[in-house]
Image (cartoon, rainbow, N blue to C red; front, side):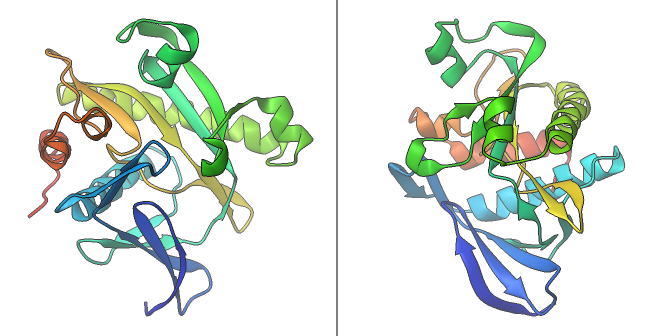
Length: 237
């Protein structure tokens, strides 16, 4: 698959056209950002780690019946994916209270949520990704009723698969976000799944093993990502 011109450049990934209109190449860069791009640093090996981490997770989800845009790894930093017509919506599941939920509701961090919560957010950095509901989605035509139903179903299916997988590796899946898009009329999981877009804690110590290490200036960001991968059996060599 031949790599063509750059389609778009995000905060941590670049997307390129290929010689096949149905496929794109995603490049995971070492750029690391937080607070809607207000804090940006370069972290060595991060692009490679997130690329291989995402490929591993997407393969596991495919095995569990969740269809994704991922096709295959092309290199340490690049992956071939299906070209999706992305929906401007983020789907967030929270198993444990953390992050913005605590700020919005005054909830103490670390409270187990039973059942898990589900939230929609509009993917818009300029507006700081505001929380939205199903009525907003319908009114503004961001997705159909069938899309809404399918996104919720798939997001909780992902939770069932990954919560157990991380637990078996000694970690708590605190929360995560997913993005979806259409490929030839079918809704698929897109974007990435890495410690950049989820929260993971050690089950015993509750040590943070995700991007909160960057947000909170804890250090050892990539080392924590690699520790998560090591526990799951991902090779970064």
